[in-house]
Length: 179
Picture 1 (cartoon, rainbow, N blue to C red):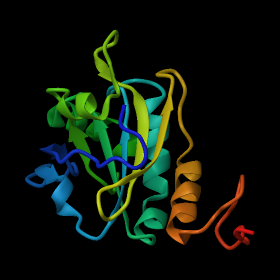
Picture 2: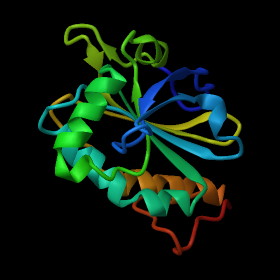
Picture 3: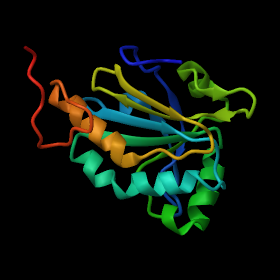
Picture 4: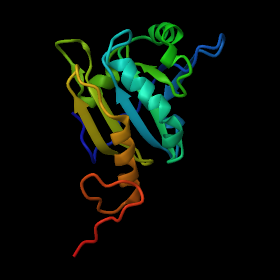
């Protein structure tokens, strides 16, 4: 599994970017967001139970991530067409403000080291990647346990201070000073 300090692999893949006819799909690349932080989160598959709760929660925080120069990218091993079908039928996903990337060939999941071989899907992983393409944070949970987008945002805030941040530190609080 790739860990903090390593480079995120370059990728280019098909994505569902909306449900408006004629504007549903486009290719998305790791090079499409120069100078931005990336928050790449993977989830097992569409039309499941835990995944839409997380995706909708990330969607509600999209403006907060954008305010921090961060781009959210959701990824699963489903095709862009399955993403579209799910977004079109699930109310909380219809207006999702960020792309849902397809990792149908499981290449990105394999390169990240988070392909669950037994289930054949991506593990529930989150990567915060700095503007130079360096992974700064990795968070992986069991397939049955959802993650906290609020915690991901808190960690992004801490990383962007470039200072020492204590446990449960929140934006605006004092950072630690090395003795």
